[in-house]
Length: 205
Image 1: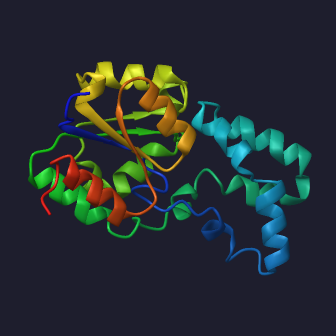
Image 2: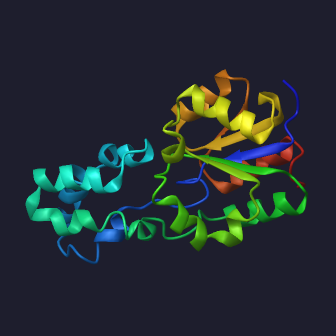
């Protein structure tokens, strides 16, 4: 494989913490009730429909019909989604800024609702303005780990697979990208990522 010169980041739990609990903890005072709501109502599988391109209004209506007692809370998921992303993962802002300062092309592939992405992108423009392009699953109706989303991204970014290193916290996404010949990093923390980027010559020790 060739040495990569560009970095493709996942967003949730790589660049930014994703914590759905943050949205509802001020509204549901009982911890057991909060856990039950997150585990059984606004689940990650339910939210994944948004990442795949289904409209929030459609998904919310279905879920509210199933759990009418929670309709008001379900309705907040879309307009208040930014609250589930409280800030950057520790150490990642410095990595992004240093890569950008070195002229390393930055890109993204994220499983993210096409409706929820624009307000989040606007809130975090100081970081995302450093990126040349970001493929958003909800806009493309393609989700990781489908190989098609990586193929689309590489074509759009103007990269050959070996020219990029892809960083994701989900092992299935990493394995799918690796199978296409993309350099990959299974993200656990910023320190380990920094060490790998230094090994590849993308950052200086």
